[in-house]
Length: 241
Image (cartoon, rainbow, N blue to C red; front, side, top):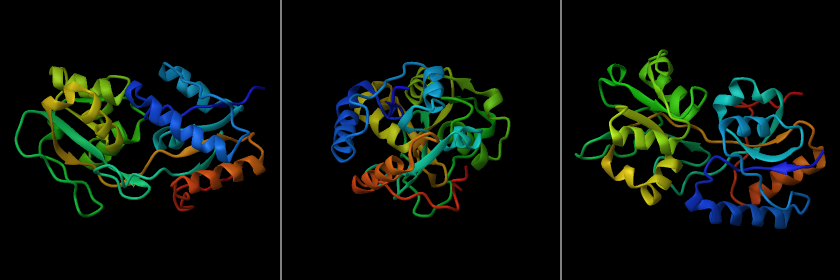
């Protein structure tokens, strides 16, 4: 069984050097990691890696974790989001983006959602029905359990931004780090305005397969902490066998 590692969640082509730099720093602390990252190209490939018993390091979303992935992996740490608007420590928000100008909604000072009115009557673009940031969080905050059923499924946050800009959807919920990447690298983002924010929720956890030896798992968690990641609150995730 050949060990593999993947960090697909923010691995935009324009950000690849940053992702590789982070992985190089982690490998300097944990030399047992694979030499290079696996870079899945489709959602099916990402899900296959998440469930691979050879996965030494990965990153996922709490949506898939709640849908059954937690039975196959251990959570190592939570990344930090203080460097992007909408993030606070290990927690993040999604930016609600829509076409048109006007003043953008500032990041809320409290933990709750701040949403524009009328979203339940509009068509969303979502990256995937299982996504916490793109679908489950806005559905919960809007109080619209049918949000996924009426959404345009795009496959990625970037594609959702493009769908809203093109007019095939009315709004999208984009996790705050993906929105920061879009503002730097995606021209379609310039046609959109942040009209609200979802509530603060735990960000995208670093994971490892259940088969990863405990000593390596501990070394990874400690190394991620040295690189700025946060421990996982047990109230959020009970690491049971």
